[in-house]
Image (cartoon, rainbow, N blue to C red):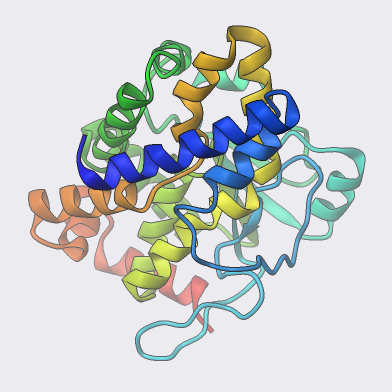
Length: 297
């Protein structure tokens, strides 16, 4: 394990020990410890706060909208990103105010069957199974064995979502659909951090947002999802025990090097992110302009 991964695991372990000793293996203590390492964003400014879909947010950024390298400002209320849309009654009322027209679910059939989205009146639901698998349960089970295996597996997932042919086809179709559709739209996976995180990074790149801002946006999942991390940790403890929860813990959030792996793989195989979008995702310059027109003021 390299020094960076060792440091990450050290922080995760410290947070987990705190959880075991202070709160009787509470995921909240773990989440507070683990989320300190990857994100340096400070306090999260939330425009939309949902009870259950805690990683729901505007692609343009919460608080002040993101700006491009040229100083253009992103449009708010156009494209949203989220974790699974299992919504409370209060959440559904808040979502209704957004006038969503399209929902793109990036999950596998198994994930959808286990945790289906709540119905959102007026919105058309579409499945874009980015991984192309029937389910992810076997991978999740493997991630409960050892933290080192989990970290290595996470890196492989970020290589796959960047360069797997099926994943690229699904992302390309998704981007063209976003460009062609009118009204507000949302795309999501289970945690709203990995598949959703990579698609968000691509859209922000097309819009012209600086790479460092894109990376910080990716890391915000650690801040937004604190309660989801807590629940996931506690649920794993209840079902499989403390050691399994500690092993799975690294994948409950995100790490900066993961998104950098996706960028590096795309650039290695296609020469640049621009070529990755054009050739790897088959999103033409005309479609990229349509996306820019939609995302930018």
